[in-house]
Amino acid sequence: MSETPKRLIVGLSGASGQIYGIRLLQVLKEMPGLETHLVITPAARLTIAEETDWTARRVEALADHVYRAGDVGASLASGSFAAAGMIVAPCSIKSLSAIANSYADNLLTRAADVQLKEGRPVLLMVRETPLHLGHLELLARAARIGCIIFPPVPAFYAHPRTLADVVDATVGRALARIGIENALFTRWGGRTAQEDG
Image (cartoon, rainbow, N blue to C red; front, side, top):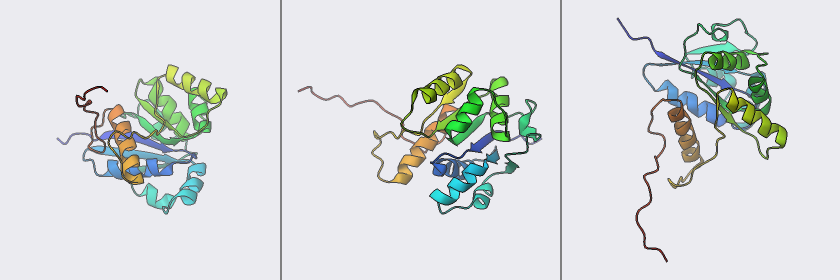
């Protein structure tokens, strides 16, 4: 009997940084035994066209299963849909607000709410700056209800040379944070001993 593939829900909301969600889907497509379930909001469709050379249709082709954001009756809307968790990349402040306040007005936010109530990881790649107090309070509220707050802040210790290196490292760290091992990023190995002065 074949093993059931691990499912991961991926949400793309309307924030800048659509390349993170696209690259995430590309990487996941190459991982055997992992099944992706994708929700793209209408605002994300617009931002994909604005920021990248991709179309929403091409992005959808990277996923195993695609759902309309308005389809709140889809399987993802139920706790009986077993998944390893969810990544929202990028996560807009609007989606952050909805998730933090359990305002499940579309399938992306409903799926996140369901994952949280079932005790599964929900990683929010929140893409906004600068942040005012309202944003910070939403981030704190989301963290209190169990979300992993993961702004796509680049790390430079691995000496990235290209934007693709930065994106890959961020995507790799996000996947590792929810328990999906990968080789997209260099783990910090500690400093070499150096003489002070």
